[in-house]
Length: 216
Ligand SMILES: C[S@@+](CC[C@H](N)C(=O)[O-])C[C@H]1O[C@@H](n2cnc3c(N)ncnc32)[C@H](O)[C@@H]1O
Ligand SMILES: Nc1nc2[nH]cc(C(=O)O)c2c(=O)[nH]1
Ligand code: SF4
Ligand SMILES: [Mg+2]
Image (cartoon, rainbow, N blue to C red):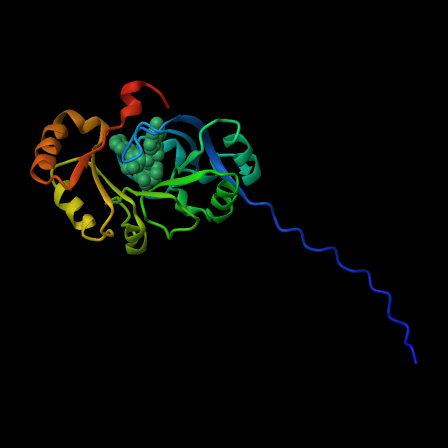
């Protein structure tokens, strides 16, 4: 015998919340630092950082709530209006956010995904180039150091050379090693960096070339 089925109104499928991220600024420029210096790249600067570097050159990025949130799809659409396909995710400290949705969407759109991180938070996302710039103010995680393609140490005083070596001992074998002068200390530190790289040629010099060029 057939039973009459109770009439149920199917609950509408819960729409997955479209992922958003707080964006301080976004700009298409030339990568100024490190291994990819000189390459055209689209920068996405995410808001939020609690690392607290005294010499940080982008302190306006620190408060997470000060920056309007954008949908991942909007960000990818903005990136792909430009001819380049290298995308740098920076901040702020970008790894304070789950970067899986953004990096997956960027790769789907044919972009290469690069990150600038202090390494203080666990890695999320899919990356073609990982630049780790560890900080004394909040230690990098061993798992992020191990994944680095590039280790970029900011040299603020002469104790930073020993500190650089301590971190170089924690990266993988193919990782590129860079010493970058802290911008305001460059006149004093640059001669020491030059001598250090000449004596320890596994290291290279990285300069913030965009600041000399007066571009973003
Ligand atoms: C503003 S941070 C954002 C990404 C991430 N929070 C980090 O520190 O790697 C981008 C890069 O700029 C470097 N940087 C910040 N302030 C600097 C300064 N005053 N002089 C030289 N490099 C600086 C950082 O070490 C990092 O490699
Ligand atoms: N041109 C340019 N290159 C950069 N490389 C790393 C930057 C950063 O702030 O993460 C940066 C930046 O702000 N501008
Ligand atoms: S970790 Fe990066 S964004 Fe955060 S304070 Fe340091 S340099 Fe600035
Ligand atoms: Mg910068």
